Length: 599
Image (cartoon, rainbow, N blue to C red; front, top):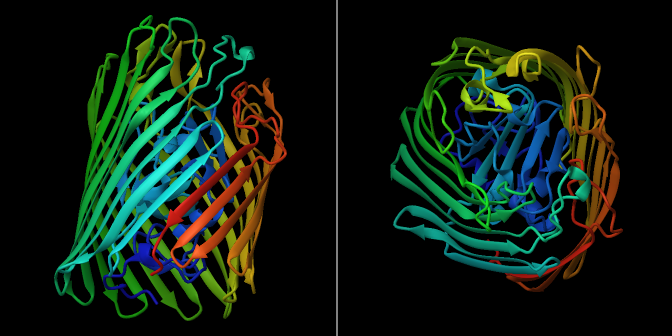
């Protein structure tokens, strides 16, 4: 069960069940059923069925995830996992760590959905494998891979707010090389991002456009050697509202590139060397020229070497090394503009009878604060053929960002003496799979110390806060003849230990359900979303009301390779917010056509 999976390609598995192969939970190939963690997999077919047109829209249906957006498509978006901060989620794209080193944020709003093949979401601490940020969990995105036969594809979607999304692509194989090329353009006039109550009034539409392309190559160089190369680029503009004399438009560029060489010297040993590059560049300006332009650009380069040793059929030992280098280029002066982090890690997985055990340990050395150790232990028990329980405990941390450490302004003062935020998490879970119905339940507690917060008395950021987060999650999906049903429920209590206040912008209750029915050439579906109330601030003085949404969707298979899609978002035209005084779209109508040869 724990033997090395020789040259498997987890991104190729498309069935949304617990037999899907994943790599994120342990950095090694295993099925969702074998993972001793709460795991959700979103396949390409799931994305097409949902007709979502952004990654945040896709993630909001997942148990344990809160999404807060400031004004519609292309606007600043925060993703919270299990009640932790938005920068407590580690994000990987084809194994490359992404994000902005100055703010610690991830540009979810700029990720082109059409170029994604698969998303793996692992909830719970993973710093013992990945290092900083993985307190709430890990989200790994896999871009489209090549196919064995040539397959062109194209789609066009149009809808409310002058929305249009055009995509083209081709995948195939030539002389042993599998390839995929994708290009897309998304544009919308948008909505008015804010309400006058926020303190300023710019009653205009805040538009957004994004031009993106990606490339992936997979080459078998020899019988036991594989090389994978991937690259993606997204650039465009997004408008927002601001005070007079302040910037209200951004030009952005996002780049991700990676190369991975996988060698099998012996049947029991696989060695993988990976290189990564991530560019996050944002230039802020005002169209009327009445403010000074600003630039915040961070570049992250990474090197990883991982070795997996199979010991018999029931033991797997992983040893590895990661190196990250972050660099900052900005119109704002930082006292330090680069730093390096080196991490060494080990993991031991063993199965004995109906039980499984997973032990992990990692040491990170950061130029700023020195060494930091994290560890994890997980135990699983197969109660029946289709039923497994697990228990786990893990520590994690988040390194201070460049803004936390070195940024300086009249309103904010960084603190170079900050220490990492630290967490301890325990979890108990139960999951089942009978072939057509998959479900999982989990309960957890996370304690976070040294939370970085603003200290009014000293006008600087300090390690001043502590948080305790208790939660429960349930997730299930099933196929009954022509019916497909899925749903999730999340209950959480994310609170500041000192004040008892609920952590900002996190809902304590949420539920998501969808039902789809196939009728010959037509598939129809309905999605229901319910989000509980939340607060916009740490003091809990600014409440945000809960809300419920109904979305309708349909697909017509007019020919083998052609589909027509239609979707009504927010059918009841609910007025709701996820960030105080920032508008969300009302009722919207979308229709599209796509060409996709069947494999």
